[in-house]
Image 1 (cartoon, rainbow, N blue to C red):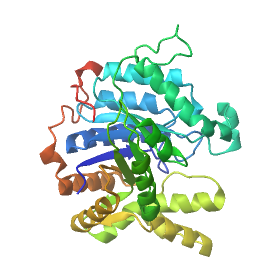
Image 2 (cartoon, one colour):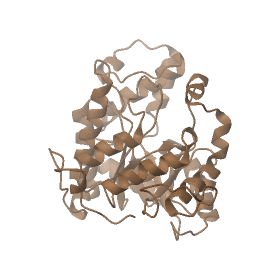
Image 3 (cartoon, one colour):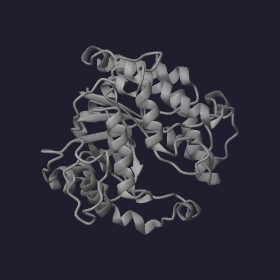
Image 4 (tube, rainbow, N blue to C red):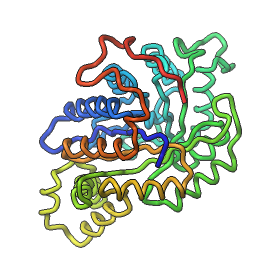
Length: 355
């Protein structure tokens, strides 16, 4: 079993519920993850996606950190090509200053997925090619080593220890290796490709002040329930959203599993839907434990980042509770200081050493 398990939540919207509800659901899930002993809780960046409310990850991370007391909080990730490195450094500096020892900086190289979004952001696809240079600039602002603007300082970030992670999209793995940073890679359905990426990262890794040796986080969907069929139904809403987006070009809010299963799908929709259900890790606690051990053995990864989304929040929380129990998280992690209510203030969060 993985020695560390974390959570990435994309603030998926649900049919019949406002986007604000999805953001509150994210904070509530973070509180549960904190109580259950998960290592990290990350949020994501998506722009103009109807089914995702998480468009401002550092803002949402601040809300999550303020509502929790032990768990590390971060991003999976901030899409660096969409932002100026100085501004990103300042945002994470504020977070780390408010919640010392609890903030992670997960960084990706994706730009907006449509031309309209890229134009609205003032970016184009070529901006992703500058990610390595942007990453070096960002780290320089935090480490106090950037020389291009000697009169400028990223306050309060400069001199703080803010762990950085690189999301492996395209050339991300090689960039992480050259920078000596931890790598986040997925998804588990393409396991052979994931193993190939990890092996290349480890072979090319250059030790740095931020990492003496490779550190790998594998991400994927995991669902645990009393029966395999119940676990499979947790995956149904997201699988249908993916099939819908592939046939209509729009990523929709999640629908209840029962509604999806009652749909009269076209042959193409059925093919895409079944494909979206395949390859994930789901089942009873025993089944999931065995499969995750196979994943760990195949990848040699240090950490698992779970990215499960579904309509039924009760089933989702139960799944994360079962996963925590089978992994023994509550037995190996100190109890959270926050449960149903947030700490008295942002500085009430207890510091915790970075990984």
